[in-house]
Structures are given as structure tokens and as C-alpha cells.
Length: 421
Image (cartoon, rainbow, N blue to C red):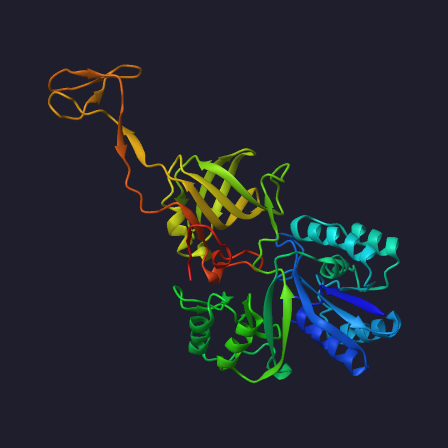
């Protein structure tokens, strides 16, 4: 019997990682004599969900076993021993799903909703009941949502990530690694790998800062290039590694405006609009502006962590036509990238006097312009070329500010793009 195992919500801000716990489960299942088939999956869900832990990622893998019961017993033991059950926001859930098309097709629709929309625990319970899916629920069991979604997720676009994990005795300690080797790996294998480092800001992006077991994660489209890149890296001793198939870097969370009925919090969109006011910087270095869209006025933000991306945003002017990508929180779309569709290339100015060449002045509201020197009058304003320091095309936040699901421009073909690397 082929069984999909889905796991979610086993970590907390204080430690652990669902990918790591998934690996521990796979290892114990293999020790029991069962086969784990293919790569495990790492599926990132809706990044705006307020009760997520960190990256809102769930894990699934396929097992060949005679029945559910022993696999379920093994996974339960691993979770009881290793998950962060003491944390109030950790509510693990595990499902064991038969590898049958009728069930997986249903779960695929549920999974796509879990990536783009807000899903209730009742919806997960309904599916579990409908198909009589064996499962494990701990505390509130919110992890059942991600567990089902990780099993059902199916899309033509996918990427890979290899995750390296630390020795348990090093959990919570500062990570030890040679920064230069990560830049060297990126230099050799970009764009087959991406978001390893941020050259402009001189940051190693793929090494986390938290107390979780991950030492680093290398993402890319070519798993052979990913493996070769890891051979260059010099780090503290690695405990184990695992390659995952994932929906990271795919924009799977983005709802196109043609599919949207409205724009609401806790969802992510691509929206076309016209800038209605010049962007302004507030305290802390955050940049805000507003665009007029088919859904009304939408406030946009490029927060301080987006670094040099804010410089591009600040050069927008009223009338520029753009398309923005990002997640809506507090009625504001937090920008992940932006396409400048059409720039304003001229601005209105008082006309030049055709007689003496001086700039005319306004005579008052609804009155013609008048030359103070010779008295010549004109009713038309003059269009003056506007020098722009930006161009049409796509711009993105730098790697240090990139979200898990956001598709980097290096993955987008056939477009004019300005890549921050």
C-alpha cells in the first residue's frame, strides 16, 4: 500500500522545524523496513495567515507499507518526542492518505485554497471525515490543514531546496560558516540557484538566524547544480541533509486581479493601477504610496527591509501606470515586486511667450496665461519633457527581503527585468 504522510505545525518560534521532524519520521519508517518513495515535499501555505509559526511550511512524503497503523505509530512517537507541544501556538496535525486519484484530486483543490486563501479547521475535518482519513491531532490540531495541503499540492511549476541540518548539540547556538564560500557558490551556479546570498547588501541569505535545526538551505531549479553548490560550502559539521520538491519561488500565493472578486486582508494579489500621489518616506525608512485600481484606491508599502527597492519606488510620480505584487495586511499591499508598465514622460508647465521667449504667468483661475513683458496671451499649457531615472519593466525586492513563495525575476522569462542580486 502506498501512503502519503502529511505533517504540519510541529515547530514554534523557540525552535524545531517541520522539515526536520519530517526527516526524523522518514528515518524511523525506513528503520522499520518500509520504503520512502521519491523526494519529500515542502509546501508553503498562505504567508499572511496570522496564526502561522514561521515560514508556514508543511511537509509530505510517500511511503510503501502494508497498512496505516504501524506508520501512524512511528510518526506519533517522533512527534511526541520532538515537536514543540509545550508552546501555545504549536498545534500539530498529521494525516495518512491512500495514494488514490479520487482522494488526491479532491485534496489538490483544497491545497490550492490553502496557499491562496484562508482555510478553516472545520474544512479539514470535513475532508478527513468524508474520506475516513487516518490522522493524528495534537491540542487544537490546526496542523491538519497544512498536512492535507502538503499531500494534495500539485502544480506544473516547482523548485528544489536542499536543507542541511545542525548537530543537535548545536541547536540554539550561533552558526559557524565561511561566508565567502556561499558567495563563491552563488557566483558559480547562479541562476540555477538563487537567493543564496545578497551581493548588494553583503548578506548570506540562505542561513537562518533562529534557533531551529536548519544550518542552510540552497534553492534552485536544477538539483544537480544545488548539490554541486553545497560541495563548495564550508560550515560547521552537518548532521544530515535532505532535498525537497517545493512550491517556493513560484508566486503560488498570488491571486491575479482577473480572478479576484475583491481585495481583502490575508490574501496576496497582482494588481494594475495608476499612481495617484508621489511616494513618501515615514519614520523608520518605510515608503508608502497609493494607486487607483479597478478595486478602488489601494495603499502600497515598501518597508525598510526591502532596502534599495525603496529607491525605485521613490522615483514613481503621479500618473505612472504600474502592476504591484504582494500580500495585503492592514489594508495595505506589502510589495514583493513591481512592474512599471508606462511612465509619465512629460509634465504640464506655463507656456513660453512666442514673442519674447519668457515664461508666461497665470492670470487667475480659468483665465488665459499672460506674458508680463509684452502682454501676449495663451490659453494652452506647455508640455515639458520629464527626465526619469527609472525605466519600464519589472523590479523586485533584494534577496535579503524575499519571501519563500515570491518568484524571483531570474525565473521569469520573456520580460524586461531589473534584477537585484
